Image (tube, rainbow, N blue to C red; front, side):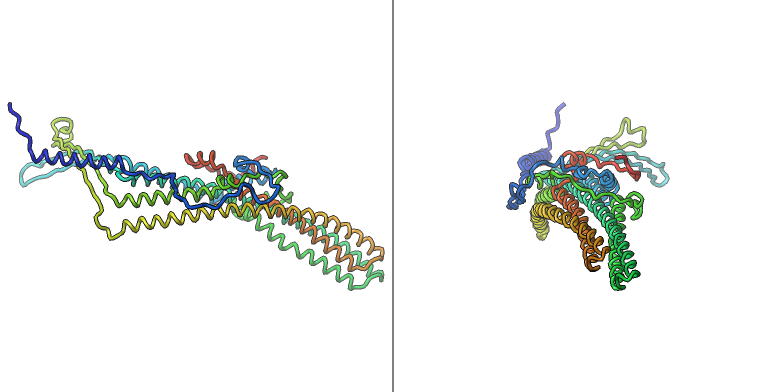
Amino acid sequence: MQSEPPDVPSLNLRALALAMLLTLGGCAAFAPVPDEQARLAPEVPAVPERWSQAGTPQATGAEALASWWQRFDDPLLSELIARALQANTRIESAEAALRQARALRDAALAQQLPTLGASGSLQRARNGNSDSESRVGVALDAAWELDLFGARRSAVAGRDANLRARIASLGDAQVTVAAEVALNLIDLRSAQARLALADANAASQQETLQLTQWRVQAGLATSLESEQARASLQQTLAQRAPLVITEAQAMHALAVLCGQAPAALQGLLSAPAAVPQAPPGLALSLPADTLRQRADVRAAEAEIDVALSAVAEADAARKPSLRLGGSLGLNALSFSGLGSGAAIAASVLAGLSAPLFDGGSGVAQVRLQQAALASARATYRAALLTALQEVENALVALRNDQERQTRLQQASEAAANAALLARQRYSSGLIDFQVVLDTQRTLLGTQDSEAAARAEIGRDHVRLYKALGGGWQSDAQGAATASAVPSRTTSTSRSSP
């Protein structure tokens, strides 16, 4: 039996399709892939080799700073920070953003793969008086858009960078919340300590007033001295109100940071305790290490990668795209006929599309993403400068506040001795009452200033640890967070030390 000669137009069409596919395949093989490591960043600020404060110890890295609050040796501080890291609303929002970024990355990965769908149909028709006729069909449809110029790859790279940025943003939220908890607890303890000093001075002034009244009754003093003593006592008692306000506001802030109602922790925090203080032997990292471990700097760096990928994706969108599709179907008169004797229908489709005229929209999109890239780079440089500034400011404040607290301590001791001597000499009638009032005011002022300076040193330590990037683990914790957001607990019971 002699075979029929092939159809010449059909062969020409097949040859044309094959040539087109080979050409496009070559484009796909040699299309430039955006280099995500080449950030093309402009010059960044010069990072000093060490901090400007002479004699500053240079020691540890991120591991020693990750849980810096444990260096304060205050179990309640550690407990409150643990609660806040579990229940703070800012951290919850950052974790939700991280889950969104992970879902977007997974969706971008899925866009690179072919799609496969299934469909089914049942048709029943009747023509006039003839019997009804049924037709059953099932089909599989497949489609795949080839990533000729790296648009899909750029999208995946951008989603990966966005995921890294959200991980760092979660770390930045953890750093901020831990520092806010520590600062508010220091404010609370400072207010309680200053309240105790005000009460002690008020009790001493109450005794002085009683002594003055006895001397007035004995004719050894005038009512002027009695009224002066009363005015001094009331002024001291009036200083309690601002301190009570500070104490209550700090309690409320701590409760809200822990995700609870403002008055929820009143029973836990109402008992006075010492102001949390960091031990001597400050742990510092070098400037370059600080920039690498700070969460906000990491986030700003990742945003540059996001913007770079967006530029590459916008540029690839202006180039041709190729989409391959096909379907395979079975048609029969009944469901049982699908197994045998069904008509098979198959089709293959290749579609090539390219933008010819869009009024400049594609170019405008590229310029838009390039402007976003420039903004991301400026934000990154600002984050670097801010990090260096915050550490330097904290070091200057810590050193000078320590010197101030030492001098105030000496002044407080001298003022206490002077007040005691003044009372003794006044009771003996050797000095004027004005000297007693002056020494008591000086004593209250120096003691209050010393307590405030001691609390400020604690705040300086917290600000310094925060500026150094402490409060999160940039590598180990970041890798763990990339795979799963930590589970939450709703328990509010106090943990054991």
